[in-house]
Image (cartoon, rainbow, N blue to C red; front, side, top):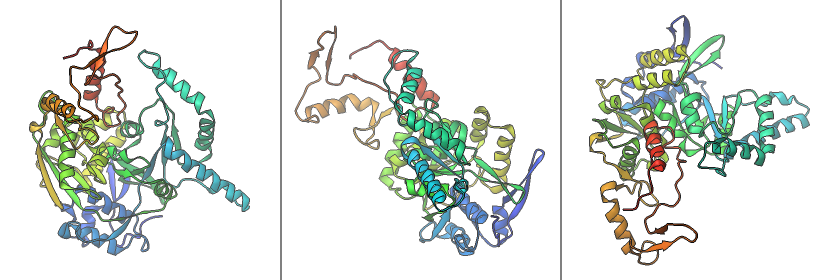
Length: 460
C-alpha cells in the first residue's frame, strides 16, 4: 500500500532508460523536517522507511517529526517507531521452525475451509543452510563435496520439506548447503543496497534493509544495508509484513583516519575497534563509521568490522555508500542497472559519502588512526580482551605460572604421543579449523589462513 505521504515527498528518479519512484529526503527537509540533511546515514535510512510506510496508524507525522528532531536531541528523547525491513534472512537452525509455522498456518486455513495458498511471506525471505553442516572429512580435495553429501544423508527429511516450501510459498528461497555461510552469501549475492518493488504500477526504489535470525546479520551493514539479528518471533512477524517496534536509537560515530600498515589485517582492526567500543558502551545503540579512512578500506574490511557488532555490543555497525560499495557490487556481478541505481539513489538522498563531506551529527564520537593498529589476538574467552602479538608469549607464560589451567605448569613440559614420532606440550596448537563468519569473507585473511597449514610444523 502506498504511503499517505503527508509531506508530498514522492519523486521520480531516472537512471539509464528506467524511471523509479522514491521518497525524497531533501523534499522532506524542504517540507518542514528541518536539519535532516545533517543526520547520520543510518538515521536517514530509518526516516526514509517511515516516509515510505506512513499510514496514519503505525507510522504517523509525529514519528517523522521525532526522527527529524534527532538532529537536535541526538537520540536523548525516547520515542518508539515502527520499522519495516525490506526482507528477512534466515539460517537453518532458526529458519526451519519458521517454515514449519507457515505450513501449520496453511493446515489451519484448510481446516477453516479457506484457501491455504493465501498463506505466504509478504516480504522476501532467504533461508541459507549453513549451521548444520558438519566436518566429517578434511585434509583432502574431496572433503568439501563429501561433507555436503553426508549432510543430505543425515537430514534428507528436512531437505524434502524445504524443497516443498521453496515451491509452495511465494517470496521464499532456500540456499542449499555448501554454498557458504549465510552472512557471506548475503554479502556476495543476496543484498542489493538499494531494493525495488512494484507499487501501484510504478517501480519504487528504497534502501535495502534486513532482519535476520542470527546475531551476525550485522555483517551486511558493511555494504550499507541496515540490518541486525532478531528473535524468531520478530523475524516471522517481519516475514508476514508486520512492523518491528523500536526506540529511535542513539548513534555513536566512529571516525577512521589513516590506513592499516603492512602486516596488519582487518581482524587486528576489528579487535581494536571492539575493545574501544566495549569501553565506551554501545549496547542498544547504532555505531556508524565515517571519516577519511573509509577511502583506504576494502568492502571486505568494512564487512569484517560490521560483522562483529554483537561482540562490541551495538545493534549494528553501519558503513555508508561509498565508491567501495559500488566497486564491490560490480565485482560480485550485480546487474549493471542495479549498480547504477545504487549510486544515483544514494547521491539523490544524501546517503553517499566522500572523504571531504562534512561530518554528520552524532550522539557521541570516537576516533582511531588505523596506522596505530598492531597485529593482535583475541583475548581468552572475550574478544575485547585483546592481546598484542608482541606480548602474547609473555602473557601466556604469565598465565601458565599463575595457575590459569587449575595448577601451575611450565612451557618445558613435553609429553610423548603414543604411536607417533612427536610429542606435545603446553602452548602447542593441536587442532585448527577455519570456520569464523567474521573472517571467511575477507580475502586477505583467507590467504593468510591458507598459508598456515602449508608451513612445516615448528616449535619455538
